[in-house]
Length: 145
Image 1 (cartoon, rainbow, N blue to C red):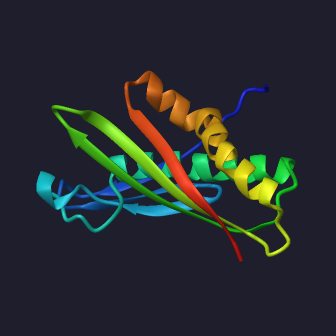
Image 2 (cartoon, one colour; image 1 turned 120 degrees about the vertical axis):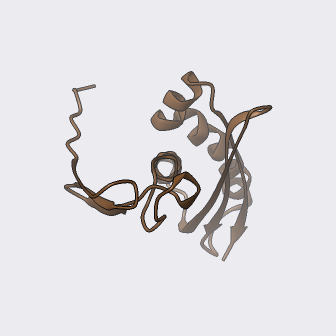
């Protein structure tokens, strides 16, 4: 695989009660320190962005795998929740719903469940996070439109 370069531009205004923006070629979002840490909470914070990255990677990996297998996908919905505690560490749970078109076969419906697990294992961001002891679980259901 060729080297991949990512460039971000960040501007921060003021102190902890200030705000900022972070920009990339296809991303622009507001930044703020969470209220619990003395900020305004009026923008994304690092953990939220990290979880969004893991969710985007899982969703795109799942989409690509379903496409390669020529599944008739109408929609993919992913709800992600994270928890962080001293006892259990950092956990991310992706719960997805794959909606296949009405012409999907029973075999495709059943195989789509397997693809969820494969996408979890194939997600590069999730795999990097696992190396940092983040526990990630992906599950879901498959329905037909």
